[in-house]
Image: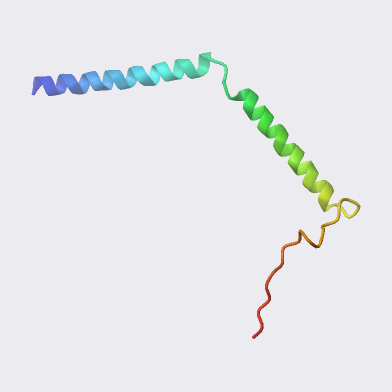
Length: 75
């Protein structure tokens, strides 16, 4: 019974150490993904601007060949 309690205390100790080590690492290191995130946000903005230009009345017109056809059902 004593060894079981000792193992339980040891596992709690390892868990607390892991959480503390993660917290220290998270706050002390610069995020690695920051540059990739900025690039992604830039790409999203570019796509949004492109879609806005296409939607404008004076923008590009939709070609009939690329327009999706919606099947109609008759009753």
